[in-house]
Amino acid sequence: MFNWKLKDVIMVCIFSVVFSFIYLWAVYLANFMATLLAPFGLAPYAYEIVFGVWFMASTFVPYIIQRAGVATISEVLSAVIEVIMGNMFGPIVILSGIIQGMGPELVFARKGYRDFSMKNMCIAAVAACVFSFIWGFVRGGYVKFTPMYILGMFIVRVISSIFFAGIISKLLAEKLAKTGALSSYRLGQDEIEE
Image (cartoon, rainbow, N blue to C red; front, top):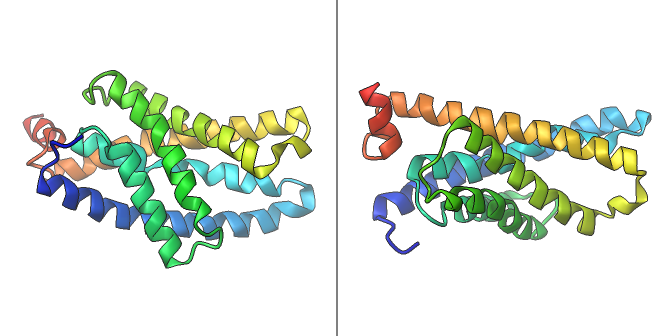
């Protein structure tokens, strides 16, 4: 955890700022979609559809930097900046960031921060999903919903997580690496060699 270089700190900060803007945009998108789905009793599903977006820092940034702590720190820093920019849910989002970052952190740590295959990226995304869903169940009062409604919410969140935090994060990082912008990182070197 303490063998970070200055370039790693800078990279985490840069991407955390980028993702904080994306996260805040996703909040407003989810709110708009919730308004559209409310007449059908499906407003909570609007958030589930975009939930995977809120895990992207915890998979994208570690894929680039490949060091311990990056998943959690990038997710928390994105949440802090998002709150400062005016996220309507307030500071509780920071605690959510900690919880969401822990799932991918454990998945990447399991293989020494060396396995960023599509399969492991998707497993990390699902780990973020599971951690966040347990937290949401406790904090969000999901007990008011029927078991089938909760199951539906969970399935939609899993799909969103795999799509955004697994597949899209991996593809975006690899596209960025191909530009040469990440040449000082393993991912950038691997992409240039291909």
